[in-house]
Amino acid sequence: MEAIRLQPGHRPIHGQDRQQLGLMQNSQMDIHEEGHLAHLGSPLQKDRIISYYSNAIQLPNVCDSRGFASTVLALIFLFYLVFYGFLAGLFSFTMWVMLQMLDDYTPKYRDRVSSPGLMIRPKVGSSLEIVFNKSDAKSYEKYVTALDGFLKPYDDLIQAQKNIICHPGDYLTQPSHILIKKACQFNRTMLGDCSGVNNSSFGYNEGKPCVLVKMNRIIGLQAGAGNNPIVNCTSKKEPQVDVKYFGSFDKMYYPYYGKKAHVNYSQPLVAVKLMLGSNDTNKDLMIECKITGANLKNDDDRDRFLGRVAFRVHVTE
View 1: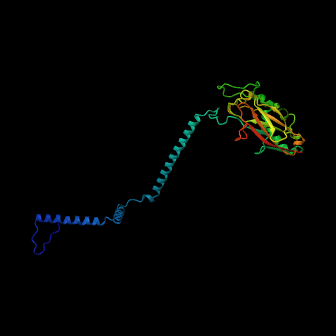
View 2 (view 1 turned 45 degrees about the vertical axis):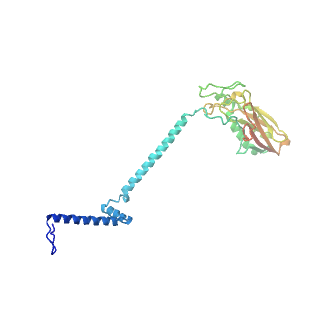
View 3 (view 1 turned 90 degrees about the horizontal axis):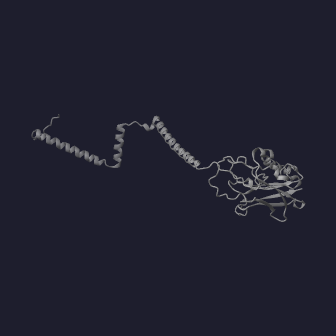
């Protein structure tokens, strides 16, 4: 212990006085430190103190280490893997639940298509027009090829192998517990002069072309509501064109049970042969075909294919 020097004229400090002197010195030190801390109360001084003690502790700078960066990247990758895996699983589960509510053989919602539309064959390209020169076989070759290819499944031999002979005039309704439905025969020869059997050019070489009219399929529709639907084709402008019809939309081809249930279904056809004369050549003819039946529509201005179809014919010599 450091000896306490006495100044001249001072009396000696005894034990009790020594203790009082030590307490006074400690009190002066506390006051000095408090004043110092109060001086350091500014934000700048606080930042310096924090920086000082942070450097004094000397924590390792793990943020700059490659090992820590790899760990962070691995954790981020794992998070997104789990996150997107969860989303994929949720989407798959939702789709599975939705598919359990659907019937493989019958669509659940069919109320938006109540009446079928009409379409023609041949249909070459996107336009509904038939333009050719009856004296030039190459000008109508594409139409003949399209018709012949379309009618291949209707060959009598193929129909006899796949489908059954039905009674005309009666709907072919079948029990629901029979998953694979039977289909009636629609033989190519039923189309007469437009079958391509007797005339392989379908009348195009004569300037009297054949056009096939087909009605779009609607599951469960009993077309005609008790009567056979009738097709009527007329010229939209005068003079009228003579027409011959072959085939029919007989009731025995309805109802249609869907592509999966009605595997061998043969869509009925009506062949229209335009009996064009010399006065009908070298001019545009607009032909419109309409389907008529109790439960069939053909006068909706918003849909020009609902129950009807119009096409252009131009024959030159």
